[in-house]
Length: 147
Image (cartoon, rainbow, N blue to C red; front, side):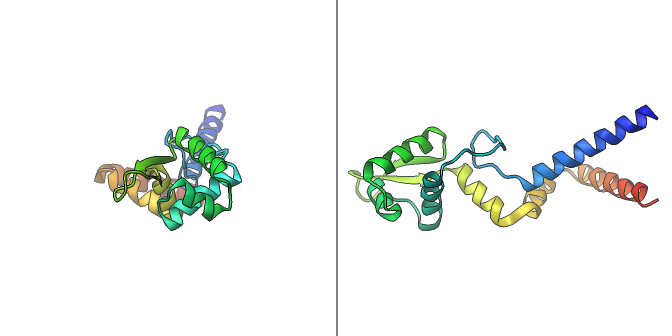
């Protein structure tokens, strides 16, 4: 009976992990799914870039009603975390534009697609045999639970 209980604990751990994997997205390039630790001004700056597109620090300061130095400091901290980049303006190289990085773009896609999008991408990357194994295992578990 102890072995069966250990198996049940293992199944529950897998179910919790699957739920976490499907429902949690990460904005951090490292993939850490812990709380992001972003401040409200950092979130507002990222949101502005995602919604309104890239901008100079001066434009961001105006959008957010912050001083230039405060905005520049926020950009520095987000850049250190790999969430934004500074890129030369393609039309005027005297200016630098702030853009979100791919992890942020991926995060916003995952949020808009939800867990079905993540699951669909994962299954798309699986072989037919792996997809069948997943479905067979889930069907077996559901059948056992309904007895």
